[in-house]
Length: 84
Image 1 (tube, rainbow, N blue to C red):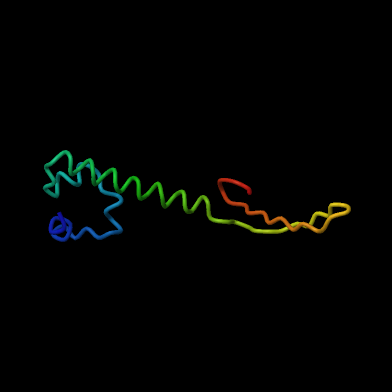
Image 2: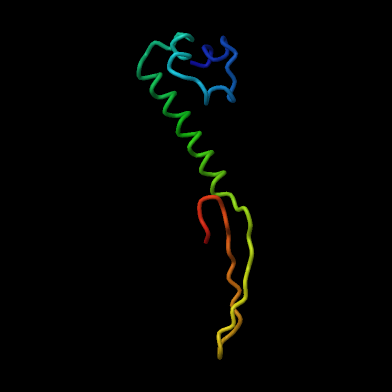
């Protein structure tokens, strides 16, 4: 499989954008191989999107005073997908 990518000058950056037609043009005739390549690259791209969405946009803390106890400093994280 590696020689096929090297022959067609496909680098790691381009693998994620290969379609089934690209793989057929490159000579990957096995349906199973094409499915595995496409699924692997799709999973990789989903993981990248999730990492970007979950990256903190801002972090801050606030102080809350509970009578007869102590100061509490909770930390808040804001990302594209959630606040915690």
